[in-house]
Image (cartoon, rainbow, N blue to C red; front, side, top):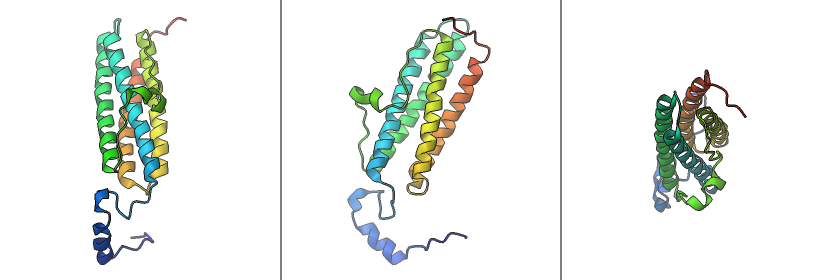
Length: 182
């Protein structure tokens, strides 16, 4: 072991565990700025919900020769984004916060935009842009949290990996699609 961190004694661990038990998983060892983490996670939650809605719309509105294949992929992505939203909401509660599902401020809190798009190539591009935004947002969050909140950081890394898969899949779908005419 090369860490310079000393282990906390069992006696201290036991004493600390009995203090502020109403905080649940948020113990003395939690060193992140909890209000800031909750704000960050609620923004990520809003982003995921906006992505769910955009993907759903695109699933139903997909038209053209490739619409069945691409529309089915949009539905898969929508379901995976919903899973991310659920994971984020659960983590927010675990940290003693309240997930913000308010539709009134959803688009303001979301990093990604809700762009309906008209054609299949536009839909793919808009979803790809949103995935790229999510990728950079999650990377930033992981860097900020790193060892201050390893559980949240690990969750965000897992979500990030799926967002990268989505971006790769969308880029593949876009390849060979006819360009839209302005």
